[in-house]
Length: 519
Image (tube, rainbow, N blue to C red):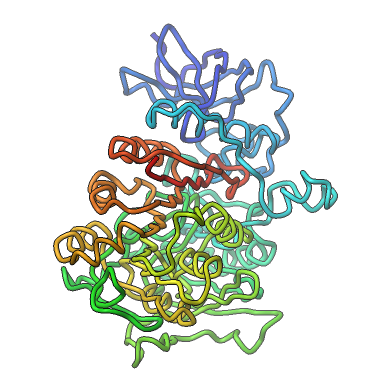
């Protein structure tokens, strides 16, 4: 039997969830990094601790796929030793069209194996890559780079700044960040020079570039660096919870009725924590030091703590506020709060949610909800689609995000934002809903954008018991999505429509939107 670090020749069969490929050695599954199906590679065994599978890293390509390309990030290329390859661009050696094909295979396989559904789903490009595919722009505007508007770099020994190596906590110094915007890349170089030799107590550095070109740079102290961020690529756990228990907190964007279902008193929900360079987002904690730069909007360059209008007096711990845009609509959010990392992702998801929501099943007067609602992006998409009289409640565990959601949804008289955990909110709603409330819930559309782990049994069971009209499910993990689809199907719902988008080029991640209805 081969030992760890031994070199072996492997034939790559297919793709697996998680950004690795599948080979077999003496009947054992081997998950191989930096390969492509159809290739023969020389690989180093990296982990042989499991009896059911091993892990290996490609060190040489013996027979290359026609879809192999020079890696978009030299810091992650085969020329580096596996333990020194930067993480966060695990598909960077594969042609973009083949990347999307592989992601489609992963989603299709997950739906079949875990959801019990046989349906091929194409993963669609967005932004400049979509324009290139349609012939609207030349190839120089595409390439799957320069889309990342949120980046967390880590600080290692001696003030070394960079991403983690793939599947480790080793900080890798890098010369460039090709997936990040040019402004973030340039600023990261300056920060790396500044912190070299003196990390100033920082464990990480976070960069945000807004739609207006405002650049925020934050140092995260060591005691706060392990609490998680809010980016799509990382494991999304519990977000910043208000700790208000069953009563929750209601931030209203407009008028209301007498209960959560009718538009009045609201109750708890659930948030999303995310972290890391490979994660598409920033930590929930207020950083120790923040500075803002903006070459195009000097009036916003100083940042500062800002209180949402719906919240009254500012909280002492309120983080600085930034503004993002989707079309002509503005969204206010905390600079360390969650926002889609791809510059075109928020627009893509807003449009897709609006288009996929079944008009024949939508009732603007029903108890419509946006669960795990963040700052109200998808609630606003529903409001834009169905008009100013739309009733919708956004539920989010992050109190600051709830404040901003209330402000962002203020133009809809029937909109409100609730701080709390989604599972507790729905459980309480089931207990207190009147017969009139239940009728409004049965007519309701529920938009859900849960953590990477999925909505899970409790939330899905609550939605099934409430007998809602349709569920518009936005998912960042295909396996978790497929498992939840299986739960909905057991409860009498079927997957009516599904689309998938390549929101994270050169990584294995994708975004899926599915609509579940009762046949």
